[in-house]
Image (cartoon, rainbow, N blue to C red; front, side):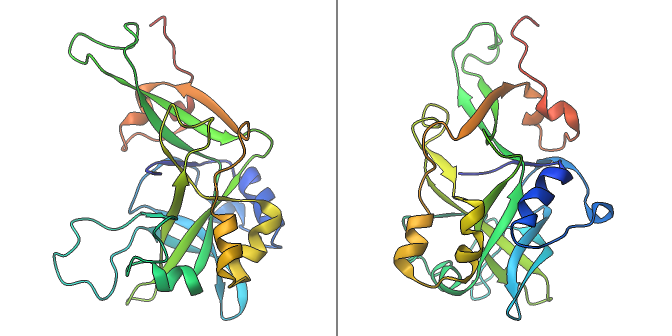
Length: 231
């Protein structure tokens, strides 16, 4: 799954958007180091035949759902079943988008006594995952229009590559910069499936970080502090 993201470096985000000829003015960009579901973020989509970047909400409830049918908004969609699920199948055919981020977070359970406390015999270490050779990544998403006129997104996940598997068995679908336009415009099912695959091993830069990020209310550069085992 993907449940928390870092979208804090405007220069890196703009580098990614340059590949699509888009501009996100810095005065419209608010650095967010600990983005969680239901938060507002920026997403790329096809709007009236033009590629645009727009504010949107992370997570949605299908418009056909009965009241109370979903306990919480849907914020992840599994690539393996996305063509079958009523909540996703029409969106992945026609309304794919991209969420530009600098990195995402995952947690790994550990028995390291330097990390565990007496009250927590099986703590989790937070990890920040970014790309090894790029300042930002393009997450594959599906987009839904809310009845009130704003856009909402759901991130697509796939099985983790070998570099990620010890931390979590899922990772977000990451679209190569050169394939972003094709992701947004190509309706060939086989090609879409090819783009919803795990990255090659070695693609990620993975760092153990402090538990400051664990609290979704915490924000700011301290979310990226390295884990200090000597504390």
